[in-house]
Length: 336
Image 1 (cartoon, one colour):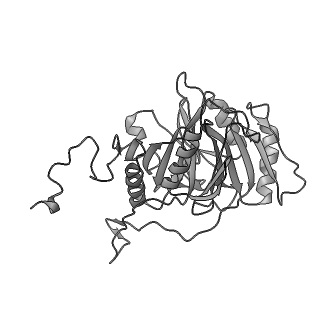
Image 2 (cartoon, rainbow, N blue to C red):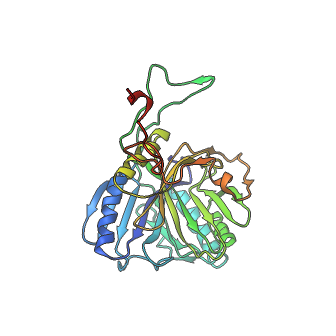
Image 3 (tube, rainbow, N blue to C red):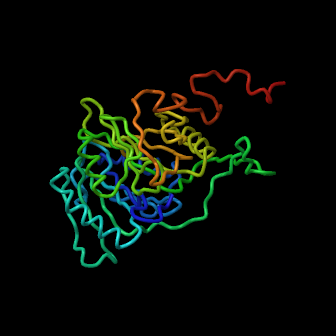
């Protein structure tokens, strides 16, 4: 979703691999199967794109443009946030100057004499580089299928689609393991992010504007867990594309971590896979949309708060069943 004011969302993320040719090749195959369009394919850089122009960059860990990694191995190194206008960029620069030193981030602002072709950047308390610049994403005419909820029929004389694979619309959110939750939450709030909901002392869901999807950033603090990447979510059109994308990834041989399922806190449908670039990766759809009138809630962590329902191990793309469940004699319409 493109936000109309302030910080609009994620324009680009940058991963680094572990530096091996095998990991580089796996990464290329993975993002092609994930449904992204390849823009640059060189021995030192891969650049991929979603439908609305949000980008995924992959670099070697030795690339001199990268900041120090948050953690060993393949991981997330940078998030570029697109902003709506120059006034927003100026306000973020001002906020950033006040935030440094108070929250443990390290500022590296560029010249702010002109915002026309400029950006500002800083390291958050985990060491992740955040860049803010005018958004380069495209407005696109993409819609999920209407649903026929009881009493609110929207789809008439029209069947819901079946997707053979997913083509993600945009990068939805980033989730970090945090070893300094209070400090990190204060840092992102100082830059203009808004708390949507919390696990007190354990996690914080933050959206990048007062009116936005439920969260663009989630910070999760676990006992003795160092800072690092948990996952990046990619927004698809609807629940049907979550299923189609997940089944396709399974047919391609990629491993499900959990899903499909539904998060009760954000209402979103999900399907998580292991990502050769580090952490997990998620197909995500039907997230709650919040405004400035929303009051942040507190939740006690637990399995029912993470998932209303979820399938462990995914669904086999060929049998359309859980992998551990025998195929039996086929679906009822196939029996003689």
